Length: 284
Picture 1 (cartoon, rainbow, N blue to C red):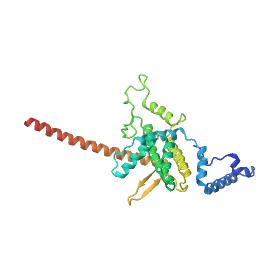
Picture 2: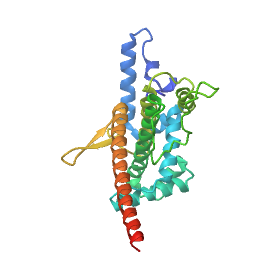
Picture 3: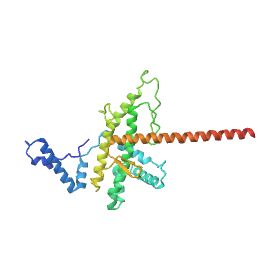
Picture 4: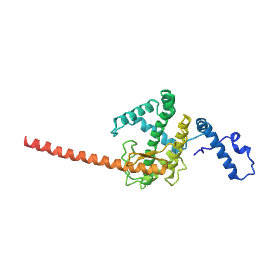
């Protein structure tokens, strides 16, 4: 991940210090210089950082796939009609932009009042980030359990069923297939650890944070990965990517259980109705 504090040598406060000074002193002076510069013009500082920022392969993959999901999201399952309309309108913007984040942001900013631009951009990026958390969790779960069943409604697994002959007749074992796919998505240096998913999410969050700050967002209001609703109705933001992934898995399991219950209820009702139809036909 690119460091937030990467600076051009000519602009660095270290150039004005004694190079024989302890590293801790130089680091402290540099951090102070950066802090002062950021406070003096947060938007310009963020824009300059963006000019040299490069997303890691994993973050870029999550961004592309989350935009694709957002463009196709119809808001199905949302009980609040206003929330459903908002999701559909956001999908329309992203779809019309060809899933290009820059075009979507440009369209939104051109259509917003100057005082609303930062909030509008923040809302878009926050929702894309939430989608990225969802996808990263699916990737992580597939890595941890390659043979598990992931019948998700948004990002569908279109792979074929696992064959009992995998690895015995020239077929690639499912775990190896998953690993190769993850290397394509997250980079060839993908290692035997699930930390790569949290790292990619943090990289994407930092990119989004700098982007929204460049439009005037308060730097002291970091973008969360999501929010947890408390019993009193308040919301607690999640700023840790690992915690966000864990929360996404809990929501996935709850959603899956609800969907299974609805399916079972429908099947039971259909079976009862079928018996009534047969009984009526026999009576005739």
